[in-house]
Image 1 (tube, rainbow, N blue to C red):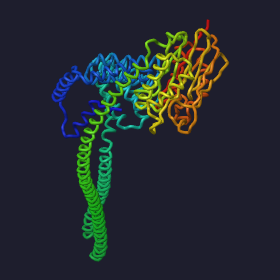
Image 2: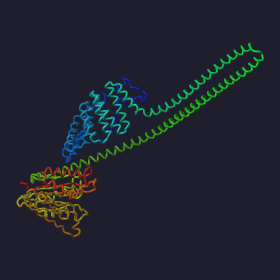
Image 3: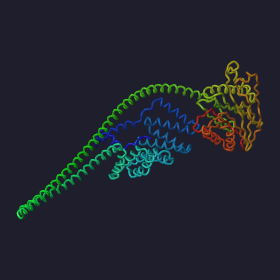
Image 4: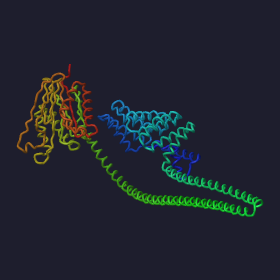
Length: 639
C-alpha cells in the first residue's frame, strides 16, 4: 500500500531539517506543484511501437476464448493509455473490463482494483466527484472481502481526501473515525495510524474546528515523536530527582532556621539571667552572691555547650547535604558522559553503515544497468520470436479454417479448440463429399512449433486423400495417411518416430449410418441414458516402430445406426491429461464422460460454454499441459 501523507507529515519533515515553512513558502510550493502537475497531465504522443502493441492487445481481447484473458488485455490497454495521460480512453477500457468482471467473472478482487485505478485517474484529472464514486466502490468491495486492513485504510483515506476536495469535511471526518482509524489500529501499523490522525487533523482544520484539530494533532505527534518522548521522559525523571533533593535541602534549612531561632531565644534567656544576677548581687550578701554567680556561670556554660552542639549538628547536616549533592552531580556527569559516548559510537557506526550502503548501492546500480541491457536484448529476441509464432498461427489458422463452418454441414455441432501455445499440435478437419460428411479430430506428436509442423503434413494428406482422391472409408483413410506420414518424414531411413493420433467420423445422409475409424482416439456416443465408447485401433499414425518389428497395422471401420438426437464426441488426450495441482490428479476420461452425459441435453452453444468452463475450473491457476480439442455433433437433430 502506498504511504499516506498529510500536511502534518510535511510539517514534521520540515522541522527535521531545521526549518519551519511559513505561509509564503507554502504558497510557492503549491504554485510550483500545480505548474508541474499541469505539465504532467498533458497528453503525450504514443510511439508507433506502443500503438502496435495496443492493436495486438485489442485483437487478443476480441479473440480471447476466456473472459479472464479478455479482461487482462483490456486492463493492459488502459494502463498504456494512462501512462501517456490519455485519461478518457484509459477509463473507457477500464469500464469495459469492469463490466465483464461484474457480469461474467464476478471477481470481487478485480472489481475493487479497477474501481481504485479509475478513481485515481479521475483524481489526476481533477474530477473529484467521479473519483469519490469509484473510490467508494473500491472501499466497499475491500470491506466486503475482509481481506486486508491496510487496503481498507487506503480506500477510506482515498474517500476522505475526495470528500475534503468537495468541501464535505463532515462526511470525511465520519469516514476517518468509523473506518480508517479502526482498520489502521487493527493492522498494528503505526505509520498508518499516524497518517490517519494526520489526515483527521487536516480535515478538522478545513472545518475550522480548532479543538478537535488539536486533539487529533496531539495523537498524531505521539507517534511522530515516540523516540523523542522517551529521551524527554528520561530527562524529566532526572529533573524530578534533582527537584526532590532540592526540596529535602529546603526542609533541612527550615529545620536549621528553627534551631537558630531556638538559640536566639536561649540568648535572650541568658540576658534575662544576667539581669537577675545583677539584681541578686544588690540584694544578697557577698557569699550568697558568690554561690549564685557560680551557679549562674555553670548554667551559662551549659547553654553555651548546648549552642555549640547545635552548631556542630548543623555543620554535620550541611556536610551531608553537600556530599549528597556532589554524588548526584557526579552520577549525572557519568550518565551524561555515557550518553555522549554512546551517541558518538552510534554516529560512527551509522557513518560506516552509510558508507557500506552507498557502496552496495553503487554495485546494485551497476548490476541493474547490466541487467537492463540483458533484458532489452531478451525482450527484443522474445518479440521477434513471438511475432514469428503469431504469424505462424495466422498461417495455421488459415490452413485449419475451412471455407464452410461446421455448423453449415451439421447444424447441431461445435468445436472447442484451445492450443497450449501460440501454435497448436492438434487440428480439426471436415469436408462434405457427396452425401457424406467427414469430421476429423487429430493430435500430432508434441505441441507448439514441432506439433504445428506435423499438422501441416496431416492437413495436406487429408486434402489429398479425401478431397482429391474421394476416399471416404475411415480405415482406408487411416492406412493412406499412415503411409503418407512415414514417407513425408522419411521414417524408414531415419530415427524419426513422430506421428499422430486421430479419430475419423463419416456420416452418410442416405443410409443414416456413421462410419468411425480411429488411431488411439476413441469415439463417445450418447443417446439419452444410453452411452457407448467406441474404442479406437491401438496403432498410431506414423512412428514406423511397428514396421521395424515386422508387424502390420490393421485399421478398421465400425458402423453405427444414427437416430434423432444422438450425440457423438471425438477429442484429443489433452483434456483427459490436464493436471490439477490442488487434487494432484488428472482430469480423466471418466470425468469427461460425466460432463458430456450432462451436456448432451443442453443447446449446442451452451454445451460448448459448459465444457470450456469446466476445463478452466479444473485447471484453476495451473498452466495448460497440452493442446485441447473436442468436437461434438448431432447428425440428425430431434424433430
